[in-house]
Image (cartoon, rainbow, N blue to C red; front, side, top):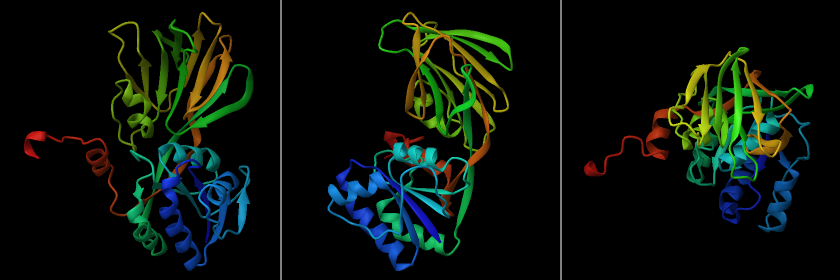
Length: 290
C-alpha cells in the first residue's frame, strides 16, 4: 500500500497527530510519499523528521490513498493535486470546522484500523471545470466553488450570465459563486445559499451582496453549461477556484461546467452527512432543550 501525505504548513499544534499518523504508517509497512513543503515544515518548524520513501514536488505521483492533515483548506489543496488520478482522499482535521477533513485527531488510530480492514466506503463528488475565452485549455478545477469577484474597489461588478447559451440575468453585486453540492456548506452558504446534499446532481448560483433584494440563490441541474461575462469599472476582476485566485481582464469570458471526472472521498462506515450537519453546524439545536 502506498500513501501520499499533504499537510498544513503553519499550525504547530498538529505535531501530536502527525507523530501518531507516521508511527501508524511505519508500523504497517506502508510506503509513504510526502509533499516537500510539508516535510520541510515538519523538520524545520516542528523538529520532527518522519520516515518517508519519496517526496512530492509536483502533481506527478501515484498512490492508493492521499492523506490531508489540516482543515478544509488543506483538503482542497490536496484535492487540486490529486485531480483526476482516482486516488481516494482522507481528511484528518487539525483545523477548525472540518466539513471535508472530518477525522479528528482522536480518531486516527480507529480510522486506520477501519481502512486496513476494508471498513470504509468511497464517496464520489462532482468537480467544476473552468475554461476561458482566451484559451481552449482548461483553466482549472474546483471541488467547492468557482467565484468571480470585484477587485479592490467599492464599486460592484455586473456578471452577465447565460445557462446553456440562454440569457439568465445580469447579477449586479460584489460577485457570483457557482457552487457544487460539496461546496454548499462553504462560501455559498455564507452568502445565503441553500444546503444541498453531496449526492445531489445540482449546482448553485449565489450572488455576493447583490444590489437587488429580489435576487436569490438559484439551483440548477449539474449538466448545464454556464457562461459568465464580467463588467467592472476597473476593467478586470478576480476569479477564485477553491480559494486559488487570479486576475482576469473583463474581456475574458468564463465557461463553467461539470468535469468529466469526480473526486473520491474516503469515509468511515459510520459516517453520515446528517451527523456532520448536526455536529458542525449545530443543525436543529434548540438551547431550550439543552
